[in-house]
Length: 330
Image (tube, rainbow, N blue to C red; front, side):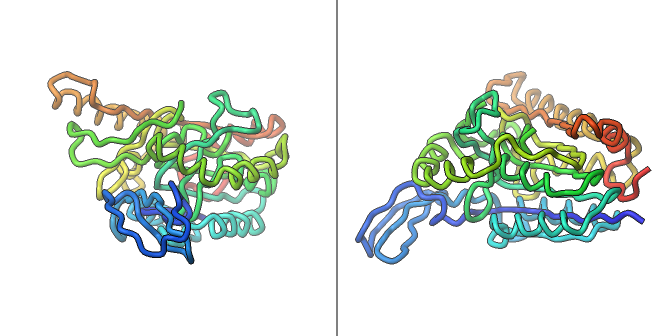
């Protein structure tokens, strides 16, 4: 009997100390007016102005996305882990992925979902057409797509890996457009954008450039061969933004709607197409409500990526043709 393990990550806010914008040395006490996105943190003799990136309250927003995806997984028989905000550190995420890699064997499946901010850093390994690595903004730092891809090489041959990414710039979030400024969209109602704004991304990268550059340089290049087959269904293209409200990301909302409490019939490609169609319908509806003006309505086009080693193409084809969230292999 096949086994399924799932990991669901929802990050509603970030540790501002780990997303520094600027520092003030030896200013123990300071007065700092902020707009809610930035925060003054004190560590020893250093005052750090950092980015919080709030996206919802407890068990709302991105945390709610993680809980909802975990509920789908649980109903299908997966062993479920949820990491919410402060628990969603790089170390914990890596640990959970590695635990799954050690536990799963051929025929098993690993499901991971992420909801939170997405961003980009300068690509130093020359494997990105846009010269930027896509990232997940975990609680304590950005988690690079190259890091994620490296972890997936630890899975055994013929394990299936399924990834859902409800974040901006997520078209190739697992590593198979420049960062843009975030703003709401009145035509879609009260919304938030799951992107680190352009200037913030530049400042955060500059403040921790040594860290992020070292991470890239320490990764195996070229990376080890991927033995597992992998499917990514993401909220948007690398150059686009993912939208959401206090209840759910629009992508996660579409996933739940299309899944329809397990009544969905079709394979993964059908599933991705229906999710894309639902988000397109949202976009068209928003344009109509905006009197036909699309200039201020953000369009997000979900991406579907299926990847395997060329020697395992038939296994990948079988994976793509399965019913979503199925633990048993055909």
